[in-house]
Picture 1: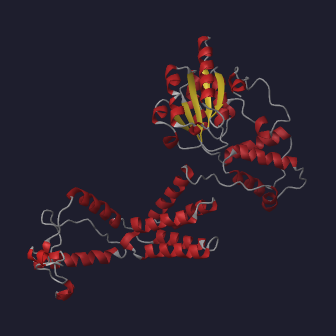
Picture 2: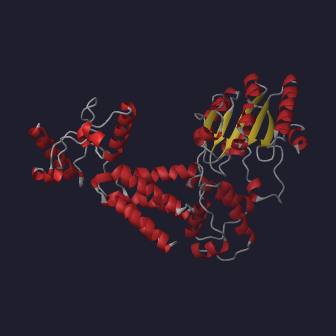
Picture 3: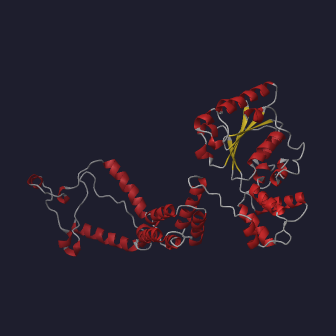
Length: 439
């Protein structure tokens, strides 16, 4: 396999079009950078790739973007545009032996005056040691590395490799780009798609920004020999719906839970419900979502509305009792409750301050008056001496000191004036006044 990949230069892409029997997506593969759709921010005159091509020289880059956005095509056309040899490599099917061979071939070609663009698809699948293996060849200029990944390079790639390559972000294809692909497909086949305008919109929406998936669906439609235009319902029966791109342990997972958390914090119930739906529809584990909602109830609502935590735990119980899909309504209810509740992070801030203080102060003993004295010796040492039982004090408040002598009173919790915390703030202010009066 390695010999097939690296035995010689890749064919010049514009030399001959693919045969008519090739898949539609292959026949419509762009043959010039100007034909790549949806990535004009990179390939245009002011884009990073456009500037490299204009200068006639390339730097190592990482192309990061969703599936079907043109990463492989862009790399091929980039090599052609600057007259470099294109050497493709897939991290899924390749190992150390393949890497050694491609580097050896690149060194031979360099001695003959031909530079190599090494394209590594799914580069994040190489382990850390394999990624380190690229470094000396990139530094010496033996190859210009162009890696493609669907994963966040910050987490998937070595810092050393990232420091030697520029990360370029490819966008999921928008409606305009998808419409361009549909028009090109119709021109290639020589007839319009058998769809109503509404079904045409539904088709592009189902592709979820993946141009390759869209063209595969288009090819299926043309092959079906449909006489009358399909409406959205008939289209849905003919084609399988594409599931949203969502890896439960990857970037999409963390992006959506972050978006949900921020929308809740910003008291936008509509946006919060949208991101909640995005996660559940994509197959996220409902109990994971519930755990995040429970955390939010304490972190961002807190005592501004003590019922928020109760609502979330009740939603967890309801979901476990009912299961899906009936129990998902309880998750929606908890989400909406949190989004519309008064917000306070005072408890969260108090936790961080108190924990920091506990770490800083070590093992300071509490004052003796609030220590239990179950033995005679402890009583002789003054444990419990002078303790005032608050329920026997006037107003149920003794105003005693509870802080270690070497530390003194601290203030960690600062209730807001929102929701129930307004009443809590009033109580604390009253207790502070009483304590000062007793002093």
